[in-house]
Image (cartoon, rainbow, N blue to C red):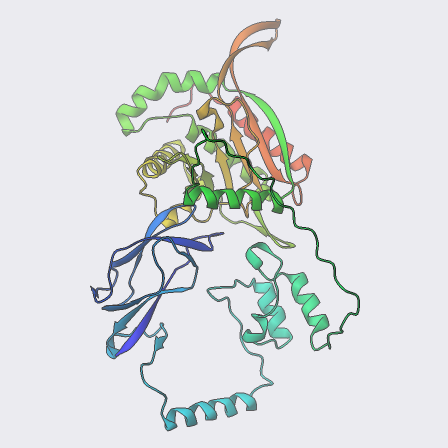
Length: 432
């Protein structure tokens, strides 16, 4: 018999941990491959963790409400030797024999004989290494075990090019002992909150705590700057009013403003690809695909960001179906981990709650997020060949938050202006 380690799988970009919400199996229960063993929750989505093998659950390592890191073992499943998957490490039940020890010694000797040969390095479940970092490690003959000790300063502790340069420079140096005592920096403490007899104390939810942590981390990571622009969407308002009934009859879908706005954002990202990037330490990652995150409300009041993959390749019908599907499954708590992975830029509709504009916080590791304000009927100056006059127009504010470390004011302003231009140039006679 052998034992299989059931580990917390990767749950998507920027997700490093999850909370155990419910064990679906008890110790002693028989488990089939692909059968759900437990339920977990992250700040993005709730999900189930299935077993990769047939066997019997013999050990549970975490309790309900415990926080588990990606790659940690959560449970042990006992399996038959002939059923053990080749790609999965098993835990032997018996003490190694003399022959096993001899085999290990022979392996060590062979390793010493080939020590001059550069060893391959790879990302592990706990650490991600970029192709550049791997190439530097191989060039300097840094083995996997040594690379795993390099301290990273990038996003989620990733090792950057600068980290490698510093490590290589100091590699093998003898550390010196400083005689100057170090003074610990003062730690800022939150001011105490007084509680009166009539006050109600409410514990933050698990998701609320995680979201709060990520919001603070984003503000501390990115230099947030905002650009605002007002767009005249009268043509869009009148066109939608004219076609929405026929669209519902033909497609069986409700035509909202969101897919129209998403289409404009996708076009603007194609025009300005340096808004469709991510920052990893000092390295800029220019995304190939345009995957739009769409902030959606959950039943409990929190927000989640499902992702529309390859949004620039969808026509308006396809965009409408994608938006409606993700929004409906978000409301019903039926989103899957893949639905919230891979976003390259995010859009949030603050106008849903009546706000005319907002200053949203960037969804890391992206570098920009666009807030759509409420559409308002306002008096405006209308320019015509015969002169200017005052008329009633439908207008909205677009609020663009971007990371000033890599996006300057010109690019941030030009991008949101491009979105507004696409909206204002809407063809009132457009057919779909």
